[in-house]
Image (tube, rainbow, N blue to C red; front, side):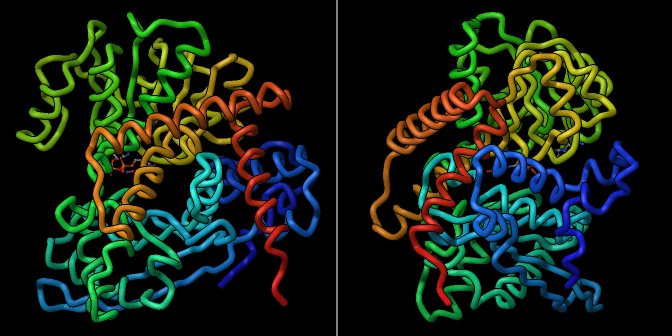
Length: 437
Ligand code: NAD
């Protein structure tokens, strides 16, 4: 395995060159590492700890065969990266997408370490992915691929080792297959090996909506902090999947006006507000948001630059870059997705005084409720949805306050504050545990 790309881009590039190419700007590992370095420098982090926390602890690459429906055999490549297990088992989703790469999984695993530390739950950070196109695969092919990928990782995952969850391209059914495969190998049912399962097999009530609910809680807190009002607060959401649709639905229920929704195949705009339950029903029937009668069709990329109070990128990485950051016209950027904003875009948005709620805080509602699911599975005692939501709201509100207070005290922006808070917590634990040799 190559470690070349673990070296910061700044050290790889010609010292005469001051600007990053778009490929360098949008490399997710680079985005994570440069923010980590900046925050670590601000913290005066011990150089040894700096090295320990900068690199993933373990990277597993598997190439495995799967029989396809047409009788042929395909070999898939999958990854599982465990960035840190200092504060508890690794925790992080599994992504199925054609453009999954080791650098992306590394970055996502590191983000999970910082995210779990920001909301102060006892997990480290991990992430997995398989290079595939789930939209082009049958349920049978997906099941066989998932089971074989799980079997390849069997000694690396487990309730006390590393606990996967859904991410882009995976869902509750995928988690049920992983749980079943792991349980067959262990010769007993082990529900706590994954989170984001269906409720009847050990899933938590409220998990499906948790990331969107968390997004809504930090938006509430930001509105209060900035002395704004929910009344007339216009919101644009990119991505109408798990995070985007639940964020839009819950924010609309709270009184926010959702004026725009962008999907990969089109955008919708209605200055008076889009009826989200109607749009969900339309998407269910039509398979797309396009053709929805309650809004006007607009360009999906232009929509990100429409004036609004809150912009929520909730689709994928690198959607706000040096190419469009100067045209963004929101007051609050609430990052539902992981890594939607590049470091170069951060600087442009700072000049425009956009208030950023960084991904490692904004979308931490999902992993927080995953933590609740893991706790409930291990207790064998399940909470009501109201209990889950109440605990989630408390953790997200407190974490928001921790981050903005840290930002004020240390005169840094919210993103760097979230990194500093998280790195400080992980570094403290790592130092206290010492180094086994
Ligand atoms: P999802 O697959 O359910 O939804 C993603 C949606 O975005 C899809 O509807 C897709 O069509 C759309 N999309 C993809 N590219 C797009 C583009 N360029 N423009 C507009 N729309 C686009 O995935 P999800 O679980 O909602 O995850 C979305 C993001 O949130 C990812 O970055 C993921 O890592 C992050 N996240 C998810 C969770 C969770 O609990 N699901 C938790 C934390 C973070």
